[in-house]
Length: 507
Image (cartoon, rainbow, N blue to C red; front, side, top):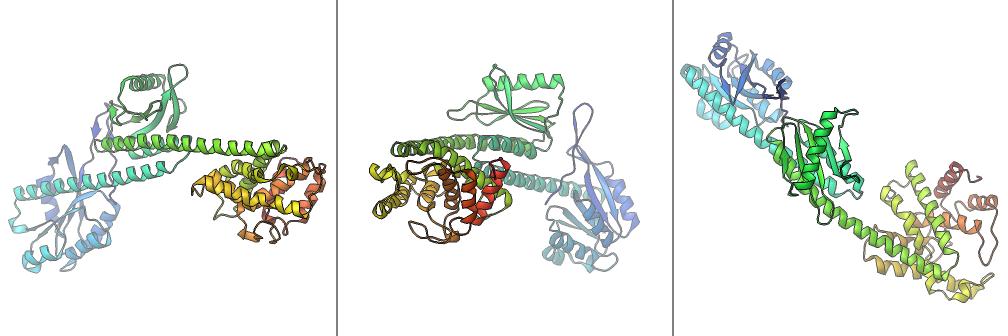
């Protein structure tokens, strides 16, 4: 990996480029002195040169390790050993993995290292006999080496920048929260541009001004002049700049407008600089990717909204059949979410329990009894215990609900409907395998079903039903503890009791 020396800026805001670092490796002190005299005043691309000296290959290794920005090396072959210089070439290319540094081999004993053999066997960039190396030839060889290094460094920096842009685009594409997307975008943008000190993502405010939606590196108390300049630049950009992902660069800022298909425009502003020319196209590419990402995020939000609406519609359908469903499912969703988050905080079920699961289970639990739409009212609303035949019909609601929801989810395995299907089919299973409809036991029961089973029984017993009176909370908690390990997963019961204790529910 290349490491680039930090570029400095003088008081007038003009970039002062760092010098080119050239390493002289030779055991002859006069060679060092002559090289410094010949090349000491040279500049290339408005950058002076800085010389480092090593008199053995071992010293050279240390200097190379301490100065990763060395551009070229003037290397002798014969030093502490006859092939010390050639071994150093191997070390640089193979052990250090440095393919960028330009190596000019210069030797006073050409017979010791024949040019044809050395060029073929070693990754060097030039070969000079000291006897033929005039001041002009040394200057020419050095400039050629620096130019080659500059081109390679530019290509390498661009490659690394593109990798960062693509990695950022992939990261942003995986975010499903708008706030996370916006925060991720400003973070990636500020990290991508070397000299950026602050990144702001802004939109139109309610009062017609500019509202900061996300920021990275914003000072706690920015100067009033800077705030005014930022607001003016962003307001102008939002009003007039095209949403093509192109960045409008100023002396100390860059502003890009991101426009989606049907969303209000956003402005990404970077402060700092002066900004390196190589960073500018990278930021423009990131902005282009981000605009597409915003469109995709909006499509995802619409899809999610449609699925949520479907869940609520199916939940309402179940309410028409069961008069207690409405309030029951609201409480059930709250308890199921609280249990899932408690389990997640404890590190239980790490392989299947994540933030997405916790966000989904509350709404998915609304569908746990949707299969009751297929149960006759005479059984569903009977004011008393069901006989064996009626109970067999009632138990069909688990399979009916699962079938309805699996048909509706269309193969989506992580949405509300797919989890709702799991819950509908499994929340009447028991941990010891004595439940229905499939007699599943232990971890074979989906985790969502095990969580909803505890929350469902708790809430159902705590409230009146047509066929029973409400239980006292102490009685309900005694039952949960008694049936932990038989009816219920003990880990889920423990988590629920912790939730109730925290909320002061009489545990």
